Length: 284
Ligand SMILES: [Zn+2]
Image 1 (tube, helix red, strand yellow):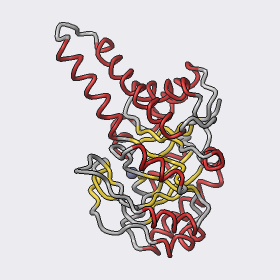
Image 2 (image 1 turned 180 degrees about the vertical axis):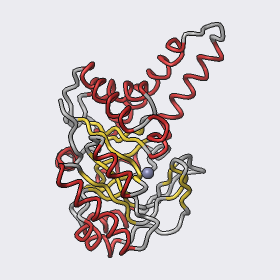
Image 3 (image 1 turned 90 degrees about the horizontal axis):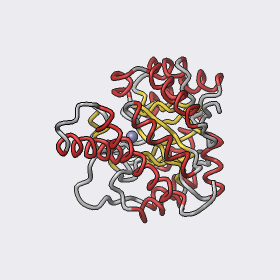
Image 4 (image 1 turned 90 degrees about the vertical axis):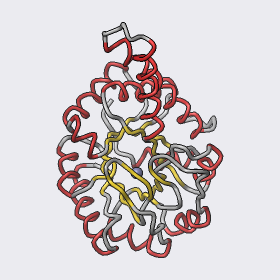
């Protein structure tokens, strides 16, 4: 099964009332864990890598590992390979050349005009090759990757229609109160803002920084129009905790597979839980 872009995947999710999980992966084992979860549940899934993960392992390795794992598992559900928080036009083009099926270009730190300009340059190339484009409007707080984003600027619903039309993006990451990384206390989301955004575009809406957001709040976001739900921190925590526990509990074992297999299982379990929570029993 070939990689697919996220356009049909997300419009189908909106139609059927579920959210598609987008999981950040770091290595072979996190890829195996996520694809294992997609196979177990029959759900479509988006596998994504940040610029720092790409710096760590390379676009070619991620593409190759995802494709090989899909074939190994004979997965039937749709899988997208997506660049998360693409930091430049050049990196987005590299991901497209490297056969990613979807890219995010993050111009959220630019002025509206410059964000539209950057996004539309990526869109014009991506769409020639059937690759989907996610853009960000407003700025999502917290720490993603090595990028520190200050907490100012939720998405302004009044410029959403213009941004989407002029940039040509297929999916829009919105700032409505979620944050990357760990939350201190209960996250407070602006549902009213989300509804206004939904009223101003029919493109897919993306929730970033979902790790640590209570299930009922995430599910409400899906009801209000979110169809792509990003998880990075939850998988990182599950992987590292399982690996650390195994190394501490079995210091006499030196075969890396013994330890890392448990980390892979932990990732698969968390990914399965999230997929089922986002679908609430609806069929894929
Ligand atoms: Zn993000």
